[in-house]
Length: 161
Image (tube, rainbow, N blue to C red; front, side, top):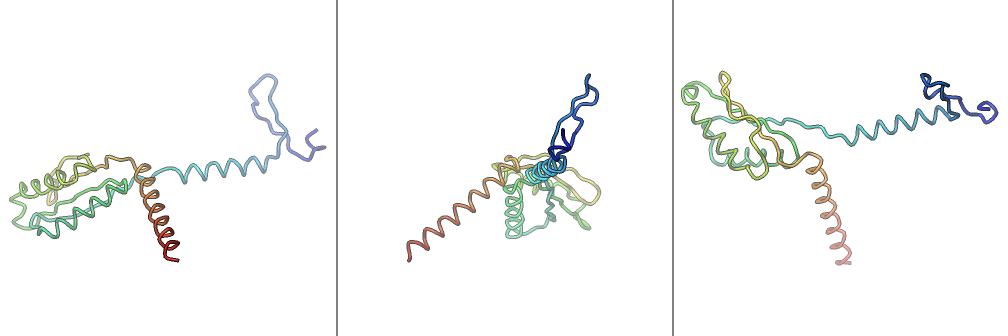
């Protein structure tokens, strides 16, 4: 019957009694399965751990720049690893680095939570911050903001004409 129609006879459940078969275009079926798998890969989110490095003797403006970078990463839905490097005599005062990391965590507490508390490992101290929003929510929010900006620009261009 399958040859008469020009399709393939595909065995669906060989363990069943009697075995179950289906008449279908097997090439088309394989193509559709590949498309579904490709779409599933596109929709999955990849959580990335971004890293920001500092030293305990950081100036205020440099601190603000690093903080804004951390906020940008967190708003994008990524985790952020903050590494505090201690050089020379700075190693005798790890509490200064700890205070700085605590201050940073306090500054971004609305958009992040402390996933791993500051921990000293040799010449460096690390802390990991996780975003309060999931990556999918953050990406959807960014897309909506871009679309709104484009729409506003189009309306402004139409109004000036």
